[in-house]
Image (cartoon, rainbow, N blue to C red):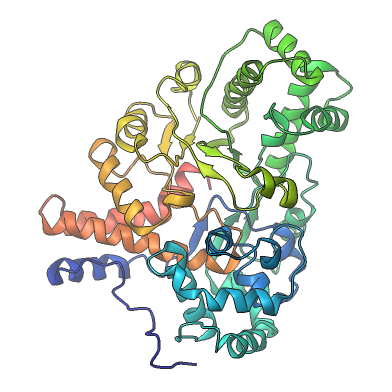
Length: 469
């Protein structure tokens, strides 16, 4: 399905414009472009894969679950209700019409690049969506997604996804993961990730109620702070038994704090009662980040920290659509002093892996690279969320590599709820790495042979090594 209105994605997209350097980049890309995908952090629900049901429609597949898409459409004047955000029910054809009519607003954005790749690779669409062709494209995609080859498990295979990590509530029974693990016909690896935010974020609504449920479920009959820590340890072990390799912490800041057990227990009791200041809540969260590191040292789970987002920023959107509705905004963060208590005790602990992400580019060379360049436990998380775009990826690589080399990198994460965007996002990362290494080869800063080894390592071996896969 092509017209002259829109070219198909160029085979040299994101590669250097200089012909000699581009030739090197092409060769490096050829070594990794078709390697299996290792995705150690994402948000695709395991239920989608376990149930293996057909996708409902193009809007639910490509628009509503993708916050990059819905937030920019909202900025362009679309209402979140009309886009099916959260629990809102909207006509999928009308959602698709809004999306196609506003296609040009995605020019120059990372999501525009991903979407063009998805339309081309999955549906053979090389024409730009418009108000006029929206209905025809909708019907074309519908005819494709009803085919059995487009079911989630078939797509996992066609996308060559070797490992896909999800993000899961500590009290989830992980039934979908267990079902997939025990299915001999399913050869990919879908693993849970322990995400304790709702049970350690003392500022969150219903924090006390969630903690009560956690202790009642897994506290072994213990009460108070002791029951709380016991329950967290037990749920971590449950996740490990189900295949988990990591924990993920979506904290506002990476502040860590070591409290004596009696002090921590007293603070926990006050936080549960709500008789505390915001500073007390911050202190409790900082202490629990320290305790999560202690638990990772004990049980071996990799600890990934995703700080720097003021979540649920817009009060009206939060009250109407709830959390995780695409209106989170990055904030400045500080790592060096914040992580010092944690790293002082655990930074050199054997087997401990701490993967640090950021939404604050200013920390790339000033804090993250020096930390990863000293502590054996610390690894650099890839550019994430608002930074998982080509130019930001290049800035990251340029900012950190002269301090850490390539060995302290944890591999690319797609961090997505939009299942069909996974291969497009990983392809972008592979092209960025090929381009960066090609420039180093062209400038005689590294040999071509070594660059060929490095690109395979950062794309394939690094995430397996750092996330203990």
